[in-house]
Image 1 (cartoon, helix red, strand yellow):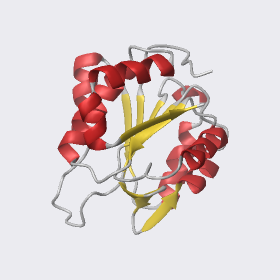
Image 2: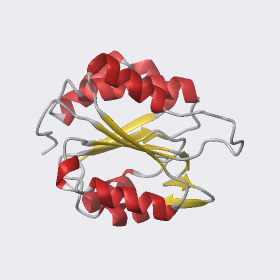
Image 3: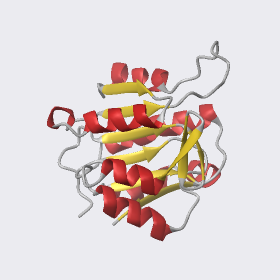
Image 4: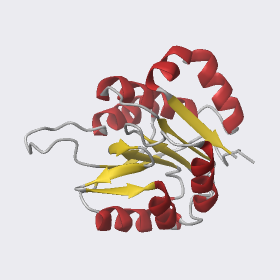
Length: 189
């Protein structure tokens, strides 16, 4: 358990609106473009403003043709145990129901503040519901630029390992201060 089928892991990213000002172009898309241009990590990027949008894109991600996009990257505002999609919050349990048993051989990463600020039991329940290899993200408020830089490092590290335990060990060895400052959490069964 905890083994990916391949080293190559492309990214399926759904991102929320970061600002209410329509002129603000803040996005993780530039980081994904950097990874694609420099590491050949392909990505699918969709912006979500409603729960229905999120459910729709997740239902499409379940299709076999998107199996190589095995890193689910959720870039939203967050609070403990949830992400903000438009004006409402979607809890880990609700997200788990949307993804029900469809995440075998997938990694789920929350590039959001506080989403994983919860007990390990809740996160493990989410893992069991989705069937994912692991879930990771942050427990605290995070700086957008710093966390985006860490997300790029993380996605690059995912390309180097099949075994999640070995990835976890390498992350903690090489990026201990980053992990501590961002209160990064990686949970797997």
